[in-house]
Length: 164
Image (cartoon, rainbow, N blue to C red):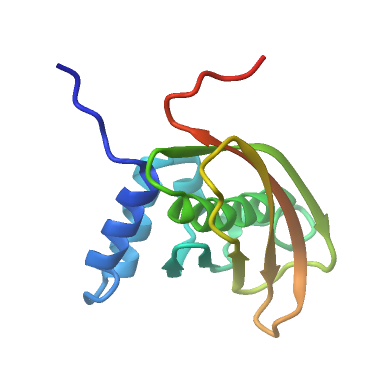
């Protein structure tokens, strides 16, 4: 008999609800997320708010994410926007649905320096096979949008085979 694991969105929602209210809980949640998704963990971002269909992630500026021009690297901005979209989308999925990114496009609007915040809002998908497009904005400390990502997610029932 094989044991079915809970959907990732449910695991994330449950972990956030347990950890966020505790002292250091948001940091612990962010570290846990980094263990689940090692590439994202390397970014060092911290989840500030999370609820189904909404995520706000903070990234402090440091040498390890800068480019040769002294601003935050373009790929770090794309990663930050993608993780915001992923948390918003995955926590909004109905039970029995899964999602995967099929497109990530990003527009860089201003040099990114200092502490950055990424936000994404999305409506819960139906859980039937569909493509859902969400926008994640990355803002600087002044509230100016420095990058805007369009992320397309393929959502479908968990047991459904991939289409050709």
